Length: 152
Image 1 (cartoon, rainbow, N blue to C red):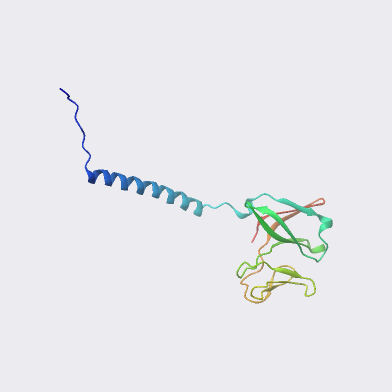
Image 2: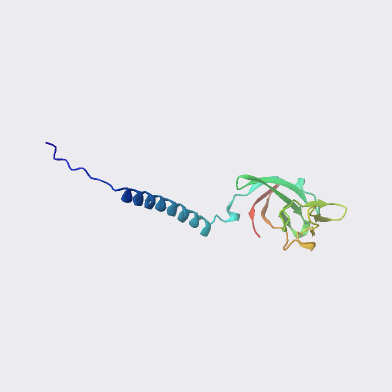
């Protein structure tokens, strides 16, 4: 004779265990996402990258360069202001993220999408942009110009 006891698991118990387990897995996933949202990596934590030599950037003429930021190519205008120092300005308009262009004849950055206009330092002169162009970290060390994460 067989003395083994068969354990029967009711359908209701089986479903409640399954749904409870799936809920716990989804809850842990959302908890991980919430942790990433509440503790993001600092934008300026990405390392600086060389984008050229000092001689590549004439005074008072913004030069568009690209570098790998957060795994994608980022467009940045490097501006040599002479005695006033250096700036690295993100090339995205702060209105709807269109790429701005430096127009030599006007001595201004202009957004082709909605008419935003910025001065050489990235300050809004006219149009719909709510704020100045975002700045990137910039370091001029010897003959090397390096840019990196966002400052503002």
